[in-house]
Image (cartoon, rainbow, N blue to C red; front, side, top):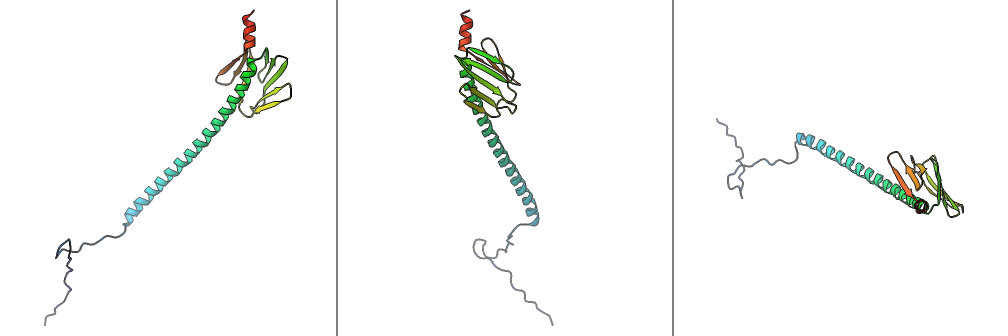
Length: 167
């Protein structure tokens, strides 16, 4: 007696592939190796993005602080330049300058914290914090010179220049 085995016939696809086309195995999901390669790439990209954002925020903060410091320095130099321009006498040492405008004395000084301080005879005081670290005053026959570690700025007095010219 022979045994007959009845296997079901192979599936027949109908439609685009046509009648009798073999069924292809459809792959769903990812292989483990693909996932193991993709995850480190994603983390690397995320780490680079975080560092880039951090660096951008640090640069923005520092540039804002530099802009504020520059603005304070400009304001102080503007006032000092006006005082020197109208001065008929200037006396200075490294950390202070005394300017005479008419009969009024104006004093400029640099304190140990690097703050620049302007005081007039009426008791009014203006202060620019932490802008003058490393500055030194010196006077010459025509005005005031401000030295720092890298450069110097010369502020002239129109009164002293005209007095010198008339001699």
